[in-house]
Image (tube, rainbow, N blue to C red; front, side, top):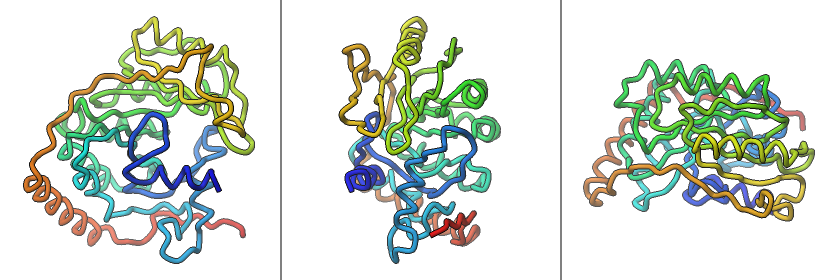
Amino acid sequence: MAFARDLLTAVSDHSSIEWTDATWNPVRGCTKISPGCKHCYAETFSERFRGVPGHPFENGFDLRLVFSKLPEPLRWARARKIFVNSMSDLFHERVPDVYIEEVFRVMVEADWHVYQLLTKRADRLRRLTRQLSAGAVEHDHIWLGVSVEDRKYGLARIDELRRARAGKRFLSIEPLLEDLGEVDLRGIDWVIVGGESGPGARPMAEAWVARLRDQCRAAKVPFFFKQWGGVQKKKNGRRLRGVVYDEFPAAEVGVVPPRAHRTARLHVAEDRAKELEGRLGPAPLLEIRRAV
């Protein structure tokens, strides 16, 4: 059950994910769209609890809006790096625009945190962020990123990300499934690289990782090597040719407001969340039934 324990720590205000401090999941569930999704850890975890009454993942990996989670960052007084939707994709085509806009609104209001928002749906990321005003999106503490697992699906996402409004842009090259060749890092502020972990993990060559590191060095982009992965992730470790790479971009964040001010903001955000739930309803956006 170690795998389950690790993931349980990744759905709260503490996280075992190496490059973040906490996770915030105002959406749960997703659907697969590319090879990087094949061994989705979030799906594996969620489906273990399908049918367990009262569990957050009682509905497995069905796509759902979690309205009560929307104001959550305003409850956290200590500043954190927050991975947004570690158990979903905020830009899934079935998530309403107005809901995504509310997520951005909370990120702007709780500006003492850094937000790390990752998607494989880069076209929608680009379209929606261009629709929103710069004041709703372009903040140094809001980092927008795309997953890049291979050349066919991943590299095109980088171009979409470059065209999006963003405070900072980053790439999560995990799981790295092949040599990506020369990657255009113009406008990119951070690169994470990692191998796939868990049963059925696909291998990653050292030369692929080293080539990406060298490109980051040349472009002066911070480089974070997350893991070699494999079935025994901890045993394989995080060293690349003897070095641990834990680099992050710098970010300007706001000051944590006094408790009374933070509580006032929280109450307003809670009211907005209730109003959204009344408009959008609690039904699942997409039910994904699994064979037992």
